[in-house]
Image (cartoon, rainbow, N blue to C red; front, side):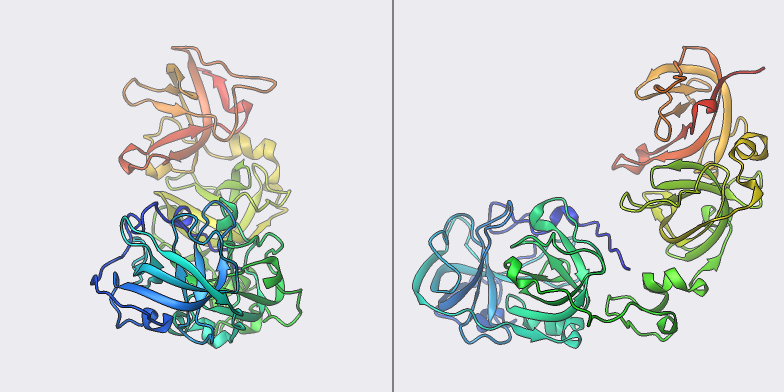
Length: 488
């Protein structure tokens, strides 16, 4: 299944304390229009910042869930395309309002909201209070929430069509989740569903749903923030389990140039095909990938030997074993995934995955298949000894990134933060405890200033600083035996 990791998590659903959030798209005319329909406000013919008043619209949802609350969604009572809009409120303007109330909204402005990081040109139309002003929300009667419009898969896949249902209550039927809803806070959890369309928890919890669930229907409001999404209002908007969802891409579908399961990816771009079709991957060597001879985002198949294990991720070097630069590669899996139990130092392994550069670090990311071998090279006592070649006194740099190396020299700084440094002052290498905590355990190591040590480990990239100029390579021992006194 498809896991979509967005780098924009921190922005999702955010609003600032003013009606013009920092970095948003908000330009227009400052005109004044009174007693408008929502369809007129949604029209591109009305410029942003036009002052608007709408009367007799029905409240469809009130945001009382999570940390960011107060906004409401309203629709024209007759429903239909372009009949809904989000109303951004700063405080308690709607405190006495209930879903189903008919209300007048006075004192607002039409806003086209988007963060500058969204370069798609798409925006969310909303009614917001003017700078230093407020919207007056007045109940004028009792109404009925319009019946949700049923969106077909063809309509979901058409962004221009989805734009016409922005702010409107809709239902999508027989949809599958392509990931478990996740997010840093309760009202920002999300996952993609059949369409593809993003499900989000802005108004209610979606924790009852998980990856691969097939749901008979999801009702909610169409919204936009970097992608089009559906926002259920209550638990009742999430239907029962179904067996009528589109099947995942099957082997026979993986070369037909169609997105058969409507997850936004077709053929070899679909994880289902990547899990079953070896032809989606190009056979490469570890050194070929690490030396940048392979373009980023290439699907590759490599055969390697495990040199270190770090949580749910691990490092490999070429198989057959060679003693050359560019002989190490990081195989990254997020913490929700687990490794096959056979993965250990020295184990030969085949990996299929996508090659990416993450903040300068070459890696195979979230591989759909990891197949350990039963090769006789899997004896860790042999492979972690003389059989795995190590490079002594190397000039550290990108050529040895993620490689298993061995360095020998005096300890230059015995108390350098969470580690120590060895080598020559000014060009010494930092030895960290990122893979193995050598400060604890049955045989802890205590650095002594000036002592000569031999350190074997993985060349890792410290790329946590926002400025790439401050990135540097470090050496990460893998086990207690990797730090020994000099033998010379």
